[in-house]
Image (tube, rainbow, N blue to C red):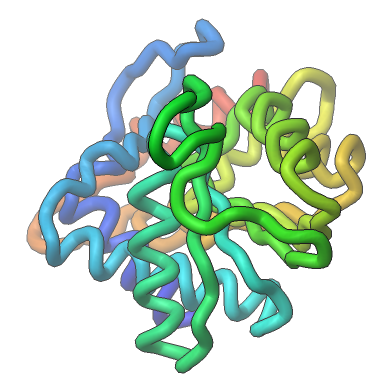
Length: 223
C-alpha cells in the first residue's frame, strides 16, 4: 500500500472522521463504520486533506485535466483545498468549480461557483464518499448543461465497497452508467487490512469484534 494511503488512514482516525461502532446510514443500513468528511474543520486538516486528494487524483488521472468540480455542499471545500494542493505539489494550475443549490439571479449569476466551464474542458469530480451514486445523478446533468466538457472521472476519499442500487458497488455503477472512471484515495478493504489488530497511538480501532461486524456487513451489503 502506498505511503500516502497509510498516512491518510491514520489522518482519518486522528481527525475523528472515520469511526467504528454502530451507525444508521441515510440508506437505512446499519453499518459498523462511519465516515464523515464534515469533520475536517481546521486549516491544518484541510491542507492535508487537499494534499491526499491531489496525490490520489494525480495517481489516477495524471495532469490530464483542467477543472476540479466539487458538488455542493461538501464538495465545495474539497475542490478548493485540492486545487490549492495540486498547484503546490505538481506546479499545475487547475481551476475549481462547484454548483449552487439555487440559481443566483443577481451579481455573479448562474448555478456555478468558481470557474465557469468551457467547451473542451476536462473535468474531474471530487466528493467525500459515494454510497448510492445519488449525488452524481444530480451533478452530472448540471455539468453537462454548462458546456461541452469531458468528464475524466470521479475521486472520493473512501470507497465503502458496498452495493449501490444493484449488486455492484456505487463506483462500479457510476462507471457503467456514465462511462467515466471512479476511484478513491483508499478502499475500506485497505483500511481494514491496515488497522486490524494493529495498535495505533495505543488503541486498536479494528479488533476481532469490529472485524467480525465488518465481515457480517459485507456478507449482506458487500459488492
